[in-house]
Image (cartoon, rainbow, N blue to C red; front, top):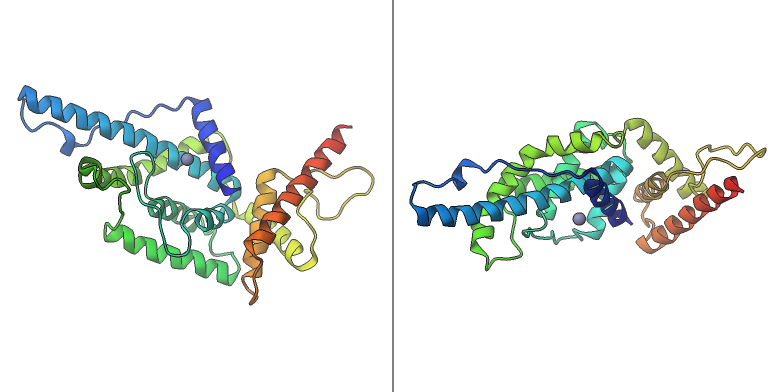
Length: 267
Ligand SMILES: [Zn+2]
């Protein structure tokens, strides 16, 4: 489900027709005017530009997911992609997962969105941040195509550096199409998550108290998703947190509920 918001990001990227022409870093410029060297350098530059555009699109899709669902998106993201100990390596099409998560966590932290999470969820996200900052500082990212020395040894470190610089621009571009995830939204998502976890009230409609005079206003899918993951965050405070299977089931049923409400209002 977290992947679904990421895929929405890809669709938005193509709809907007974002075409990023990255400047070629100085270390990829030819050292001499020799025609043979020029040719080799041109090939490397093209390879770099292709990777840079793909990585940029991935980061853009992550930002869309992040702004739709906030910390819930990151938590779901590393439950799906990073696992407990393994962090997916970089490839010409995808930035290292560690870098993707680190950029998202830094973005949340800079807006104080981690501060307000329940204690254990906050601790979990910050533990990841510490671990990933170390990995980043040690230049510890690995490549999935080790046999491709040009990518693994030469381009990957440059791409990591350039994407960090480009990240502010990615956020600006995303902000042009959707509003940023905010503390207000997180407070609501956490409240809905609490209601779900403690009283089994599914996050389906906007108002917590139904009016009973007309069908309620259905919650957006991203809010339903965020509330369910917030219920998971609340459950981490207890010794037997919700299982991911239960969470999946509750999430799908809540999405169904919100959709039914939407249909009902159209009758
Ligand atoms: Zn993607």
